[in-house]
Length: 147
Image 1 (cartoon, rainbow, N blue to C red):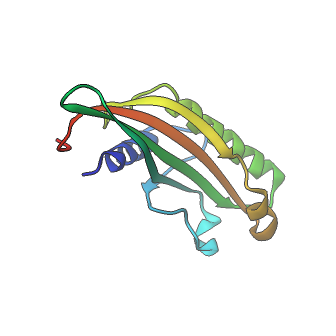
Image 2 (cartoon, rainbow, N blue to C red):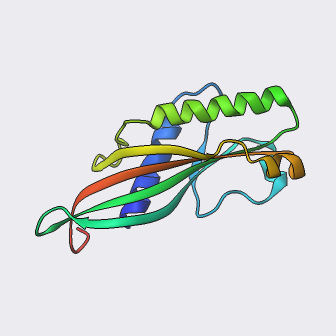
């Protein structure tokens, strides 16, 4: 399987094994949820995004940087609930920060960013809270064949 998919699956497993202020059932997807009707319930999607670099670690092994997004979505029109969702996103970020995913120990955490803390367009147009956490990991040790 592709390294980025291994990392995304490991992030899903870590999130689903954790306890947060509200229940989280993460799933790996290739895009965030688009059906507003299904977003009445909290949705957490882990999306493989990019492999911005592959470099030589030594003569036979590679190191890849992989980027995975965690997208949190829920339909809401309530300020207090939106505040709670922002707090949940922060909890998720704090949980994932500076840790190797247990299911993919070769993946070393590099950083986390929040390019979209709460998408104002989604909130205004659809009453939809959408937040994105962008995670970066370095995965070292695969040989040039991917093994």
